[in-house]
Length: 244
Image (cartoon, rainbow, N blue to C red; front, side):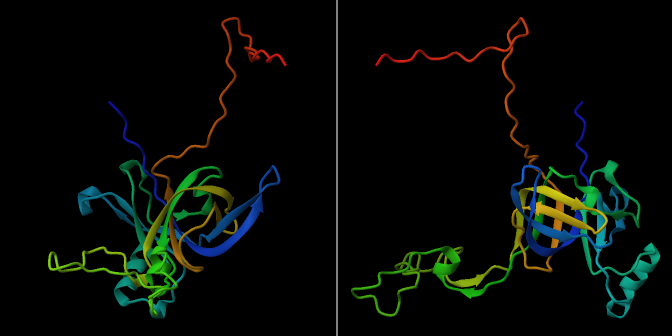
């Protein structure tokens, strides 16, 4: 029988911004820095009680006066200080943790791939050229004050309406976005810093969910040289040179 794969919990961090680090070869690597601030288990969901298996995580500090009375009682029962943000991660039965356990940045290892989820930066109301990369109308010959418009959007009497999902002007950004397969470039457990190679959606100060990659992207490995039956490496066959 095939064994079920263990699904670990992720963690919750706050985006600080982007910088660069240098690897062993001296190459600079652009990274996004996430701050992991007192990320703790605040609740456990089980199949017997809740119908599914998950862990509730809290991160950051919240003032007691700004916390509602029911939530103050909830944190007091778990013996945890009020948190600024709460989320849940679905996990397998063998990956459950106790309430109060702290998850640090070294939960992920350098070189592994992770998926990140956050809310993208809101751009407000945008036209079709900025929002959908439209080319716009002609700049001459009959086009009057409509150079950046999206052109016709309607139809004739049939169907007589604009289809849903039509690319038009509207609110841009401020959406939940998941970026897959970002490599962990650096970890600093003492300062609670997690450095991911590449860009992470969201503005500075946004909360970011980080979990193990679901597609298990692996780094490319160089093929080993072929070996014959005698245990000696085969020499590369040289093509005969053409006569001048």
